[in-house]
Image (cartoon, rainbow over the protein chains, first blue to last red):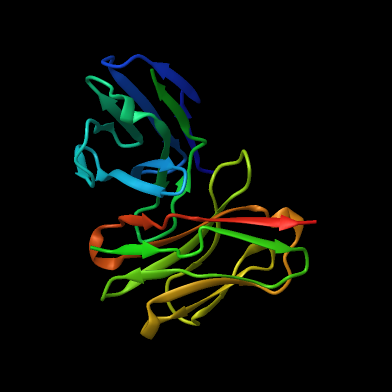
Amino acid sequence: SQTIHQWPATLVQPVGSPLSLECTVEGTSNPNLYWYRQAAGRGLQLLFYSVGIGQISSEVPQNLSASRPQDRQFILSSKKLLLSDSGFYLCAWSSGDRTEAFFGQGTRLTVV
Amino acid sequence: AQSVSQHNHHVILSEAASLELGCNYSYGGTVNLFWYVQYPGQHLQLLLKYFSGDPLVKGIKGFEAEFIKSKFSFNLRKPSVQWSDTAEYFCAVMAYSSASKIIFGSGTRLSIRP
């Protein structure tokens, strides 16, 4: 069966420090991969999605970037964190042929 | 670009009451539609989905949703809620032309009084 791993679960980082959140999927190949940010009262905001290695679509201009160095690996990064980057970040995958997305457990990021 | 609106931000019901949560989307073409649920402290789970066919879709735990294309709506319903239905509910849309991009609404928090 397919599983999605996202780490770390919680992270506290100072302003101006770099960020790297990693997400990997097991048990499937060529998944679509997603990064969302969840904020109270604002639902899930799609940040990036990828339909293949090296193919990244950005939805919201911001201080973050994403990369997909391997088929089942999706990384969310920042060179310098801002206070406004604090939030709950969720990784998700889908099988790529217009199916539902499956979510990881999320990372609670606090920028101090 | 597609978008999703959930107009009810917080709904409070007593047990055994009927539930209907509104969801409207904005997109003129063919869509896939989803309802997800997030129980307290848990990750997002799929409640039900619509791809094609019968516009009345049945999901887990007695939930159902009806796709009304003319109204661009996909409302979630349950005839009799339970305390365990307390959770946050998210509607989502995937447009066929958008390479599997899934857009979510802002969510509805459902509180059930025992």
